[in-house]
Length: 99
Image (cartoon, one colour):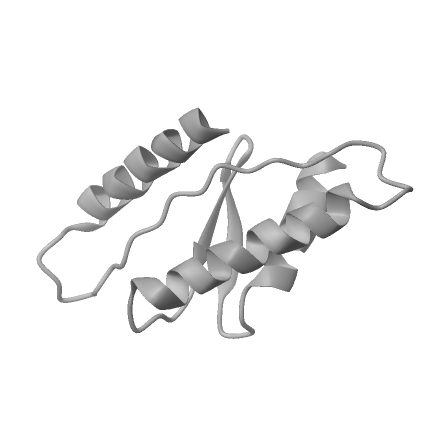
């Protein structure tokens, strides 16, 4: 149920052009069109806002917390898919230490 609720929060938080998928275990990947990091940071703020709204509901059986990592991937860019995913992972673990 926690994974379902988390997926719903993520879907609610990204634009209709975005795509959410479970990446493995308790990890999700969101692919969203962005012109820069400010677009991504706006989405991260929206995710955090929706998590807070969920956790503040009186009927929640549990609370949800997330660590977030993100990066910009350009199909013809200088970084490979693997390098981009590694960068995302590093940011996520850095955010996890904050939590």
